[in-house]
Amino acid sequence: MTARQRRLGLLLAALVCGSVALALVLNAFRSNLVFFFSPSQIAAQEAPTARAFRLGGLVAPGSIRREGESLTIRFIVTDTRHTVPVVYRGLLPDLFREGKGVVARGMLDASGTFVASEVLAKHDENYMPPEAAEALKRAANDSAPGAKAQR
Image (tube, rainbow, N blue to C red; front, side, top):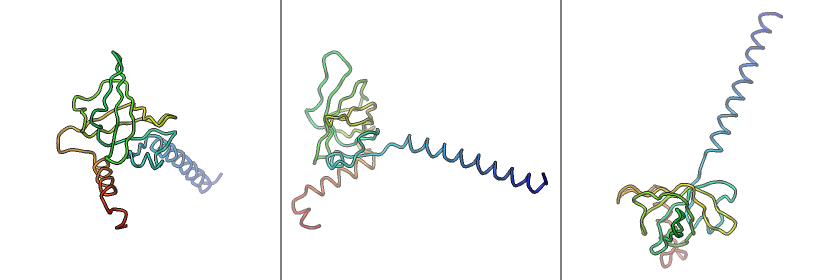
């Protein structure tokens, strides 16, 4: 085998190893990517049904229900236009309140209930995740009188 053939073989082996490494990194990135959806997007069936995603909006007033002595909590997330029922088993953040912003991570079940594996509450009065703020703004604009006539 000549020196040129050896260099070519090493170059090809390096390309194959690099390609495999890149494929593994991209696959790991894709499987850990979690998208954000608002209740209006879920109502429009834009959210995935077999993957985890984030649901964001406001906790609807009067919607928090605790199931007995267990850690299971049911509440409703709204963007003022649509609502999504949520069930979560675990401890809620201290700042979790009715009428406040929330982002929950989980999946939709067959009945349309969002089964959350994690619930995050905003950390002060001025903060809301940008995606949640934008979704609330869009929902408010869409529900304004004459909004559809202007389109």
